[in-house]
Image (tube, rainbow, N blue to C red):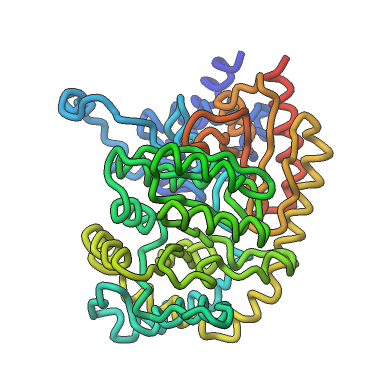
Length: 482
């Protein structure tokens, strides 16, 4: 029935397209479904048919449009089959991709009219958008638009990162300086640079399990052997870390002590102290990824200083990102490291990116110095709490089959455990067919997943549709379990 309905709709749309100019926007999926009395899956099938024929093009986040003349010219299919032999066997699946459908992970774009619960960024109304736009305009008129940057980054921005950490350094500990800071084009490149600087291909790196999918990606790209360490609502067990380091001889432990992505865990002061003792006893490094420093909801977690603030031995390598806090368009972050390891990291960063765009650095520094940024930080916790509570309420009402591991006190995500019989790939695909975009949790485990999980972003756009989205998620989940 669906095939015939989609074929009829496709035929009607071809007639509609024939009488209109290239570039004309088609009605939305929701509008077409309502006007023709069809389901969204049927509408999407018809649009895919038109896309395959070169009649329309989809622009993610914008809409579907009649293709231009240059796009509608049909030529023979290009044959790329020779690449199969040239590329050989694929070493592994890229985190962020589904096991069966490469576009269904956390990296895929959000279809028009869909509710996005899958990505890792806050919605635009949770960003200092006006200040960012103004800062970019000022930077474009400055010398930053036409000059190269120092390899380690603009001195003023390096100083800001150093001061941000040094202000939380306790008495008796030597604070970091700008010399210890290397500016990054986002912290993802920093992870790869750290892995290469401290370890080599085939050598062990310990990661919390589950963890940030980008750390898993960096591990695979650098060829290290990823060793999982179970983590829970309060973080990892220091005794177990001791055993893992002793067993593997690993010299690097990657962790997120504040609002672990995806679980939202916050390490207690006791856990932090014991972890540092274990790392020091084994002569290893701790990579502290403080990605969510600006996303605290309650005062307790916000007041905890970074672990790097209390370390002047060079044991802690500190990562700080601004891409989520300011704008995903400002790919700016920093790694703070002391001693020889800092020079190794800087060399690896320079080899891959030479330097970070001074235009972006100048704009980021501009925003950080404005009263608008300070005002933004004061109001952000309440706005995050509102969104979190909306999604938590929706999960408890419409998704009783899921176990909410904890209500996070910051960060951007909820972490849900689903029944073991859940087919995650099918759940993701069926939800997207109903305009709800989610991503399964398998990619957030450095080794085998310990169950069926979902990470839902509570800071995304359109919080007013969270209830509707989770209701659909619950219906699709129950249908798949029958």
